[in-house]
Each structure stands twice: as C-alpha cells, then as structure tokens.
Image 1 (cartoon, rainbow, N blue to C red):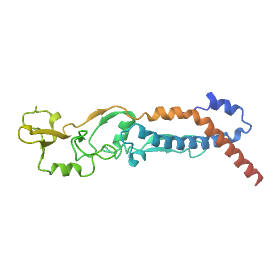
Image 2: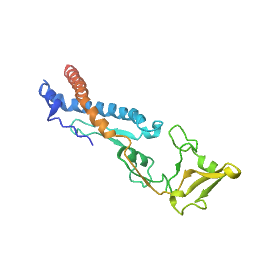
Image 3: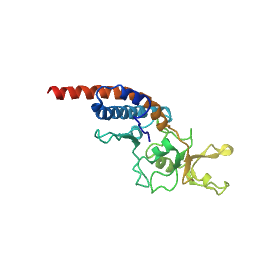
Length: 223
C-alpha cells in the first residue's frame, strides 16, 4: 500500500504557494487519479521485463486501480485482482509473482503441480505448456506416467517419462514432473517498489489537476 501525505515534502511546499486553496481537494482528486492510471499502465509494461517471454494479457489485466470517487474522500489505490475468496483463483499465481509465496495447482481437480522440463517439451512463448499438450504426450506409445523402476520411491521422480534411443543406447528421460503438491516461489516482480519510485512524479500530476480545477471554477463563475 502507498500512502499519500500532503502535509510534508514537495506536495506540502506546492500547496503552501497556491492562491486558491478551495480547489485543492478537487485538484488532489484529479492528480491522484491521473497518477494511479499512469502508474498502473507502467506496471503492465514493466512486468514484461521480469517474466521470461513477457506476461500474458490476462496476467496484465490483473493489475488494477481504484479511482478517487469524490474530493471529500481522497482514497484510491493500486491493487491486483486475485479473486482471493476462492481457493483456486484465476490469478492465484499473480500474488506469488508480486509478493512471493507458495505455488499450488491451478485447479482443485489437479492434485499435483505440472512442471515441464526445459528443452524436453515445446512450450508457448510465455514458457507454459500449451493447452492439451500433456494429454497428447500422455497418449504417445513412447511415454508413460509414474515412478520408473529402479528409481527411489520418491515423489521427486513421479512424472511423465519418455523412452528414447534404441538397444544399448535406450534410456528414459522425464518430460514433465508431477510429484509435488506445492513449491515455494520467490518474488519475481517488485511492483510496489516500482510504484513507490514513480510517486516522485506525483507533484506533476497534482499541478495539472490544480490547473484543471482552477479553470473549471472560473468557468462556473463566468457561466
């Protein structure tokens, strides 16, 4: 959460120089909303630099902001849409990207995580399995699911395996790991820190809002 305090710093110095203090609340409303909108758009573009292959549009649409509705209640915020009341939210992974946490299967029907091994399975541009890809691989004659004979009875070895080579060169290799119910994930995208740095631009947004507020007041008096 980012708190805007107009009692100190650059904003306070600007406020003390204003001629029309009556327009300050409305100017703050305009300035905050302008800053929220532009910062939210900046986050959507910036996240591409932190995720391999960039972020999907659905992921970007999870970055949202709540506008200040009126000048008497100057509250607005940046947030991410998680549908947090659901155990398996559509964007549960976005919370882990921004804050770090625990990765769980995306559906209650799936009890295990599905992790494709790099270089062994073709992935989409965002590094994810294509829809229906697992089912296609599972139905191939050269693949099998489970823990191979001779390997430790550990969930680390549970997955989708493929038989490769012939004769003496015959071997198996894991394509997709399916043994873990969850795994930790570090924070990947420092969204709050990026937004806090952009707050240095807020005086610019406020100045534009103040100009609009004063012009609007003049038009009302003249009308």
